[in-house]
Image 1 (cartoon, rainbow over the protein chains, first blue to last red):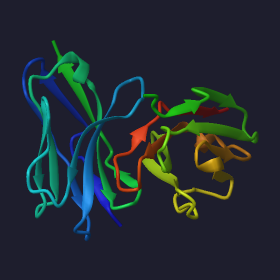
Image 2: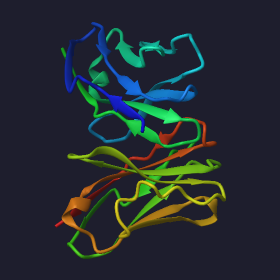
Image 3: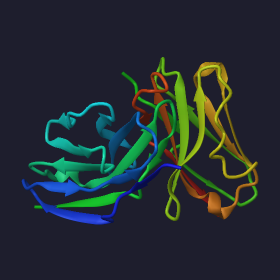
Image 4: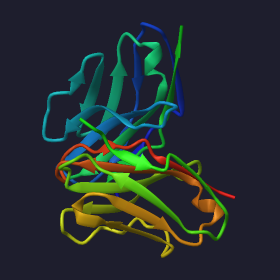
Length: 113
Length: 113
């Protein structure tokens, strides 16, 4: 069975600085998707970024980028120029083609002004 | 366009009562998922509907849980004889096809007294 591990229960970052959230996963599949979702206190899960396993290039979305290391089964999220609105719970998730999401336990990100 | 909607937003019920939770997916999305988010278990997959195929019910925790999707659109998750351990946030997600990104609704917070 696939598993997703987020080893940082909580992280803090100063406003305008950069923070990296870690995620590792375990799978025997070669084709899959990886996601980072953000969940603010409103509990709405918001897609931050997505990576297809067959793509070698790391995905980027404005201030958000990933470091995808397929061989190491690592998928970290880098948030640049952190903003107060980035404060939330961040979930790393794995998805095999045509299948359900498997989530990590989440990392609470606090942004200090 | 409109996102995934869920109702009710919050539900308080007494132990032993039945509850129904509703999900309206994004129009045109053929895949629909239910997840449960609880303090002790994190985010867990419950059930998955894809088009006219038989649903994947592998995540339902007991036979007290059931779900249906009428007309390939709206879905209802029913919990019979609720127990206190059923207290959680129930999240619904939909995607355009099974391989695409899942978009989440705001969730229903269920409290069983």
